[in-house]
Figure 1: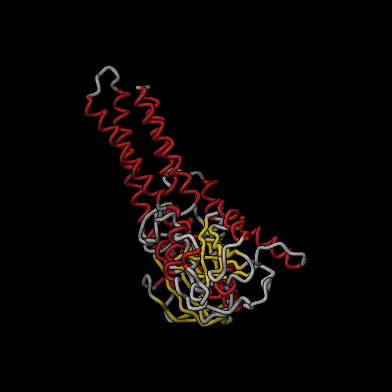
Figure 2: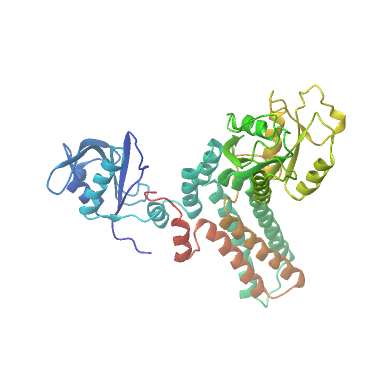
Amino acid sequence: MKINDTIAAIATGTGPAALAMVRISGPDSINIGEAVFSGKVRPSAMESHMLHYGHIVDAGGAQLDEAMLAVLRPPHSFTAEEMVEITCHGGAASAGAVLEAVLASGARPARPGEFSLRAFLNGRIDLAQAEAVCDIINAKTGAAARAALERLSGGLSRKVAAVRESLLDAAALVESMIDFPEEDIPPADSRALVQKIDLTESQVKQLLKGSRAALVLKDGARVVIAGKPNVGKSSLFNMLLKEEKAIVTETPGTTRDVLEGWIDVRGIPIRLFDTAGLRDTLDKIEAHGISRARGKLEQADLVLLVLDGTAQITGEDETLIAETGKYARLVLVNKCDGPQYSNNKFDQSWLRISAVTEEGLSELEKSLVSKLTDGQGIDPGAAAAANARQVQLMEECLKHLETVKSSLEQKLSYELLASDLKAAIEALGQITGQTIGEDVLNRIFEKFCIGK
């Protein structure tokens, strides 16, 4: 992909703000800066990475805004190209006027993610790091941002590179077997090959093992609160949300629609849903809410089934326990602070909570994290596959490695071994971008925001 033009975009949000930034990248960046900036120092004479005060002007010399301008000289810029960054007043009008002047001076509007694409194509970052840029922007919690920052700093890339390097050594050994078929291959070399395959397979599986936690940190999880009317679902919803969003009364059937809100549970962004009490009813409005509640159960990453700790287990409870057993689920015995609560009535594996006193909240949060990460927990510093593309490529690598091991056991031709090893190497190379097509790159970067 050839890059020989200059692009520009507003890199900050369009809403009201104190400041906004317009980025310019490409061979004419400084010339465009010269055309639009009026200050004591011309952009062409500026030291790299130094801010200078002045005004942005249009083609006729009319002042558009006060601004600070910095020249970022290659290769020490985000795109590794010549860049200019203009910091002006925030808001759509000021930033839009500055961008319009820049475009009128020769830049073209940047496509979504094009700055990051150029950084990748110019070797500033690899593809896994570029995807991490997008993850940082979209992070909903501090832990999610730290995990993305670890990937941006190359944590995942280094592990993938180490595995790929080991496979390249294995491929070189197999190629030597092809080149000298008349020579007997020492048993030590055969053992070394098997050991390399086993080691790399173990390393890829470890990266995949942490993918569930990485994905839930990045994308969040849908958690649905369900149960009969009046078991305390809305109280639990309010407790977790830390605000009185759901109406709580002693009247059964108060919640008739699905309520939702975002919460941060030990770093995991969770979209929490409070649903109508599940029961048989002749009320058409309540029945519609119950139907929507059952629909949310189908979409949930985790169901919190709430039982009333002050009442006996009923047939309705048993039906709900059976029906929700097909989902990822935690069973919560609520109202454990109530005077009629009896611990002996309930399964000892169920969590005891009080949505009023917050008793059991810490254990609930711990169980939520464990369930949503397949028991892995959250470690923002761990390197793991963090999106469906990376997971698929690692699984593809493992599939080829399994074929290599099978071929070794069956003593098939070295050519077949070499072919599968190359396919495994190529799969890993696509994670960091060493081996990837232009169409795939376009699909990845078009998901980015404009200006990044």
